Image (cartoon, rainbow, N blue to C red; front, side, top):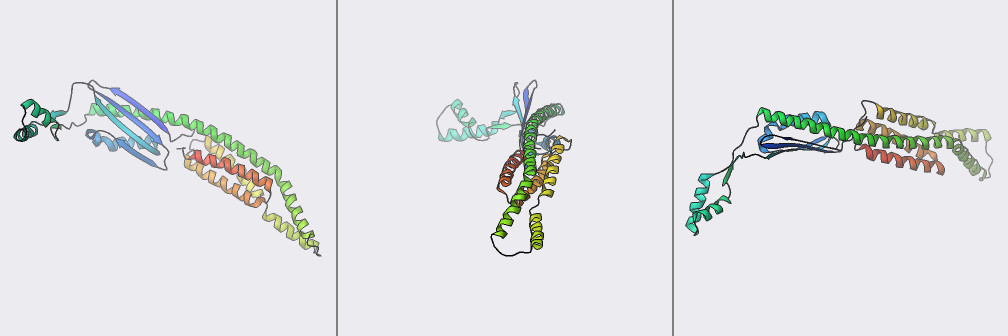
Amino acid sequence: MIQSMTGFGKHTIQLPSKKITVELKSLNSKSLDLNARMPSAYRAKELELRKVIAKSLVRGKVDFGLYVEFTGNETSAQVNEGVVKQYMSQLRSIADGDDLQLLEMALRLPDAMKTEREDIDDEEYQVIQLALKEALSEINIFRSEEGAVLEADFIQRIQVLEELLSQVVEMDPERQATIRERLEKAVSDLKVEIDENRFEQELIYYLEKYDITEEKVRLANHLDYFSKTLKSSDSNGKKLGFISQEIGREINTIGSKANYAPMQQLVVQMKDELEKIKEQMLNVL
């Protein structure tokens, strides 16, 4: 089962004095592009958390957010008493006002409040790890559900390509006969004497240049390989992308050799379906 790189996961745990929320969002990317947002007091654990996320999500543009909301009476902010008194003294020298007014003005000035940095304790870190585990579980479920939608779309489009290929196979004898007839008419219009044996040899050589037997076989094999890979345990976007490139090469070669308008119309339809597959492939993990 393939997975999409698009996903969302969120988990919140309520502690006695704070609420911890872990949020994960992911979009498609060629590699893992992880952006982390968290309070500065928790940055010491960022590397460990990044490793856990990278191991689980593997690839994608990932936004990781750790949010801590204080819900109790605890606060790490305190009045910077010395700075406030200096502000009040300076204000008193340049403006009239009672102490309460000066205090209100001083508290609005820079560095009037100081925040005591608190190191994260083991118990709280375990809670964060649990919240991250649950959020990762949610985003992976989301990715799997999106992957199932992509897989159904791929199966449908591969079936369309197989149907178009069967039409190409069915049309090929008619194409060869038309090309042969076209060449014979061109020679007859010249109204010159020709060596029939030599002409037949040249005709066979010319028709061999437009033979698409190998391309038809290889294209059928690539389509089958794509379907089998889609269902395999090691299926991934990069591998499916390589197979789709090979499919594209065979379709292009058939188009360049066709020399027959009805078949070239089928080739255009095949290219259109393959392009839609490639667009969706960008979202596959």
